Each structure stands twice: as structure tokens, then as C-alpha cells.
Length: 400
Image: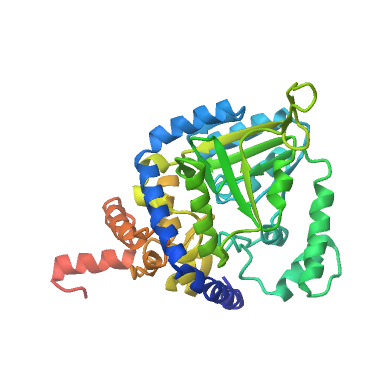
């Protein structure tokens, strides 16, 4: 990342720190942290049972549910669904899981236009190159208003001033126009309630409501998002919001428990009143079944990267895909392989533990990475300078 982008990112992170500090230290937030830690622990320990329960609950709610073992499987399922709907334009909501399967890169290869509805993600999409996000909820936090103005003016052939509201209104109008004939919306999920068969999604902009009102709503979520009950799911997203934005709740909390329907005419059930006529949930494994259990505790708040000294120094080159910082490095081993894990910054981490201290569910990321370094060395992925030192010690009893 450029020095100017890093500076802007650090300023944005400091704003989040100040906003969230008072809330995070409140007794209610501390109690919520303790509750969510137990929820995630129980959920991961009972993941197979909860997965089966969620599948049965989805079916009961008339939600189609499909399993995807890999990112390629998830994409193939999506392609099959899109073939059933005459829509070349897809409305997309913010989702790390959709970034994980590279949806925006792969769908255009098949002739589809994916339109980001989140403002930050749309700005990065208009940027076209070097457009990896820097934070789960503030993807464009590294771009100052001058740079954003240049991006939208060049991409949309416009001439707005470097004024936030003008930029927002221009992007909103462009997105709205592009989605006029879109019949398909795709989103992720913040949490899934196994007992009720409900998907919980939080947002501030109202864009997920737009996505979920398309004829077909596809939801792609990792199996680690499943928790026992709707009350548990709400607790998870409340804690995520506190640590991600410094607010108690987001403007919107969507709970999808089935397709749109009404029975107001002689109690005859009719689908597709205003919202989706079909809801499909794709539950993604993609290495999660083999992952270190603590890696799956993550609630996606991004507070770890806000406080990480390495991330604040080098930015989003420390991490994997949309999974940023040390936890992203750890997950890359299971989503991809040892080489990807090494290249994602396995040896960038200082093992300082600030990520764990600032994680709402206390994921021991530094310990996970330290263990992964040992495993990585065993299969030949380690800094070559370290290998030279090891060789010198073995031969000369000295690192030199």
C-alpha cells in the first residue's frame, strides 16, 4: 500500500478506536463478550449437530439449502441458479465469504455484471485495480476524499466535487440505475440460527434490503456462522457491531427466515409479494472442517487489524484475500495451502498478541501462527535467511 493510503487508514482506525472504547468497556458489553465466547465455543464444538439442525430448519422454512465443499463448488451452484433466472446483472452485498470464493472475479467471466451495493465496496469496485479492502466493515478506509472523488469521476464520467454527500448521491444513483432489471441478489450472512432456520444480516446503508428483495436471493455463508438459536445470533451481531463500528446496533438488522409470501386472500399461500420468491442458502466448508477450532470463533469485527502493529505498518498485504491480518493468514492454510499461508504473511507477525487482547472472543491468533510456523518449516516454507542461519549453526556452531 502507498504511504498516503496507510496514513489515511490509520486515521480511520483511530476514529473507530475512540468511538468504540467507551462502549467496549461498559458492563453490558463485557457481559455480552462473555456470552458470545460461550456461544461460539459451543457452536464449534457441536458444529456437526448444528449444521444438520440448520439444514432441516431451512427446509421447514421453504429455504433451499445446498452444501459446497470448496469455492469452486459454491460458484458452480451459483452458476446453476443464475441460469434459471434471466438476469445478467447481480446485486451484491458486502461479504467476506463472497470475497473468499472470488465471486466478483469469476462471474464476469461468464458474462454477468456484479454490482456492489455497499458504498465502500462500490468505490473499490470502481477503482478497478489495487482494490483489496482494508477492513471488514470499512473496506475503503484507506482512501481519502480526494482520491475517492477522482475514482468516481473517472469511472462514472462525472464531475462531482470532493464532498461526501455529492459522492454518495452519485454512486447511489448509478447503482440504482444498474439494478433496475436485476432479478438476483447475493449476500453473505453475519450469523445463522440453527433452531429457527434464520439468517441474520446487519447493515447501515439499507442495501441488504435491496438485495434481499430480488426474485432470487442467494446467501453464501461459512458453516462457522451457525449458532444454536436466534437469540444467540443476535448476541453475535450486536458484539460484532460494537467492536467493528463503535455503535450498539446498526441501522438495519435483517432476519431472513424464508421467501416472501402472503395468505391474505382466503388464506391461500402466495409467494413473491414484495420480496424474493426463492431463497437459497449455500453453506460453505472450504477447509473449515479441518481448521484450528479457535480460527472459527471469529465474528468478523476487524478489531484485530485495527490494533495490529504489523497491519498498521504494511496494510492489507498482511492477510489473505478478504480475510485480513493474522487471522486471515491462519485461515489461508485451510482455505488454500501451506504455500499460500507463507505468502500471506506467516512470518510478518511479531507474535505480540495485541490481536488477542483486542479480540472480543479472545482468539489466540499469535499462538496459532506460532504453531503454523513450525508446521510450515516442516514442509519447506520458511524465510530463506532463516534456513541459512540454521545451516551455519549446524556446520559452524555459529549463525555466521
